[in-house]
Image 1 (cartoon, rainbow, N blue to C red):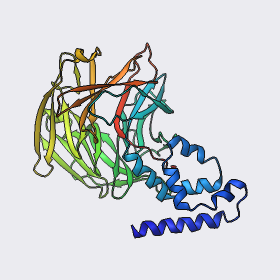
Image 2: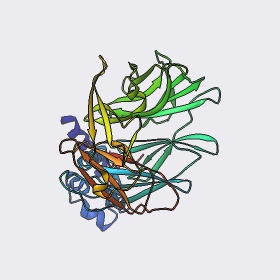
Image 3: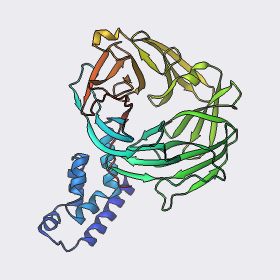
Image 4: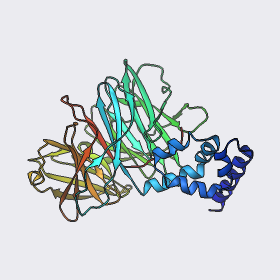
Length: 396
């Protein structure tokens, strides 16, 4: 706390020195208000209002750019998580968000989606991962693979440099964040004959974005989604392309070291990876990552001990969906909320009536939340939903 106050004091002196002679009445009035009070006021505003305030004066831009303020705003945002939606429409990815319902005991009123931004979309885009306010997107445009980091709150995008590779090999990337170091990293792997042969890391925030080669002790074949939990990036892989032996790869974002959880249980390769109260969880229904009106039973495994590879299994069954007016054929697993400890389901495609489901593990009940404002379509435009998204007003 002492160092934090010192940094704020230094920032205050820098700002006052930079704007010691107010050029207009707004700055003159602001000079009579302490920086601490102004940051407290700004932290109570919405992210949209913060963007407007940045247009008022250079003094306000300086205050809103202080690292202490951006961390203060982010801390308050973490207490008010949001639902994030990435929709595919007409060769574009459209990003929306809504407040995340916090009352687990009743169905909430319809939530109005807030539009954030559009991102050009290529031939395919099956790697989207939001972490701590930023969203990593890997897609193909004009037969070229591109990785983009976007901030839905500030509507900024950052195109990452291409990983170093001598030949045109398949590239698979994962997005990670370490909460103690407050550091974002991208792990990228190039594959030859299905096996990862080059492992590279890019650290966001560096003056010059560049890839660094790192060593991996065990060759493997990464093929599946990843998830970052408490500074550890998890993804699934085969030992080799012709083997039925698979594993969960653990990549420590801070140390950049690999470890592995070997397994023969089929659920590890079939299930969806989720964050269950800070632990790695896997969930599936009869070998699939979705439920339907007929297939309402699902299993969830939680990693109890990463060293001993111990898992805890629980089985659940949803009440009949028709009781809640649910007619959609498929509902995909999204994750377990950190605030209400409910598992969330979402449709695959946009529709005029779009809703998400929350299932309570304790009460064995469902609540339905309608999402409005994303627009339906006659085409089957897919949508991916993410929970516990936070707003970050830091400029990239």
